[in-house]
Length: 308
Image (cartoon, rainbow, N blue to C red; front, side):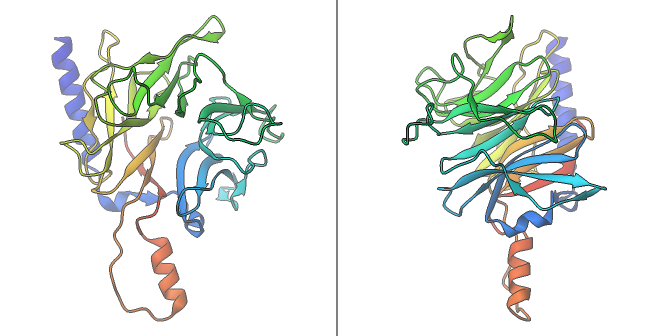
């Protein structure tokens, strides 16, 4: 009975997600079209502050940025001041808005000038009007000599992340660390209903840990490249077999880095979708506007209303 209920739930969820119209998928904010590659989005609980990653065309430069809303209008984005010449990406804001997790290859010791492998870090602040602290490495048992990516936190403080480990199923896999007695326990590899011998990465965990959204790469049932998938827990607390969210959210291009605003039932995600076609242009401004503002194959943040 439990298994049948789970299957029905997943089918209904999949159908609901797939029922979206392409016209219901929007750019988060067209002011971000001025940048080449924008990815890794999260937004505060009250919706007035968002964080994301800005990257150069080849991805060699990666910085964290924020954009704030005042009087129902988004202001101009700003770089986070603690970022330096190292790589910074994949922000995730805590529920109270006063801790920002992210990934960086910065050295553990500021006196060193050699980058290390990618670790999960965080910064703190007293409130949103105060400055962020200096970056703090989250440490063991989460960080290791391997690369750790894309932190996401449930309401009970359990942490999910991506790691490429020889002990995993294949390439990138999704792990979680349980928060218990004021500390994190050792990483646990999620099972075969989520991970495989391929690539699984960029997981978003729901507040109550009842569903997880993430990217699988070049799957047989996919649209192509990276697709967003969803897995839900059954009545026994086990993760069900993940299902492809489907078109038009997924395309033959890369979709990744999901973030779901449960309060407003809005899915944010990064996509490299492309839908620009040759045409005659009036002038340089017309050309620039058309290429920058449309789906041009570069990483952009998209949003759509979905009930999960």
